[in-house]
Image: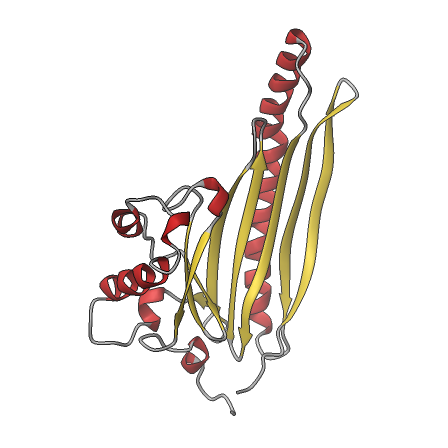
Length: 227
């Protein structure tokens, strides 16, 4: 299989925001910049897309979350509480970079006081030849209901270690299933659930690797590729 010539460069937006000379908020936003001799337009378009999202997130942090941090600081000082610095971190991982396909996910961790912060995950799988995102349904090839098939696979995996999940996980895996919550790896499609969806906070974001049995390896969607 041809390996992609797509290069990934990490870019960072980072700052410490202060109030009355005291740091009340730190943020670090990592986001990717892609380049490829074979798909220059697509990689530039996708890079611009992620740059816009990162800067929108930066503006939100520097306005809304900063306002919350200042209010929390004032309240802490007035009541003699410890001052807790807010923290926002965005990280990402490219999980598949083969032929004309790039798949990746982003984790955003936000701490605004309390015992711990919360992490939310988003993901995208891109077809560089057509400069568009690929849906989970496009990859499904078996003659059966996709969600039903996935629920069976996920429930089978949970049954190996059920104690780390909520007791009503069978209902929850269906209730909180989102078709957009997936990314690709070389060995299969990964379906994920957000924190608290199907398990306690301590169990984190739960992921389920579904081998390419009823799914097509996304690189097979690339046409005119020498293998």
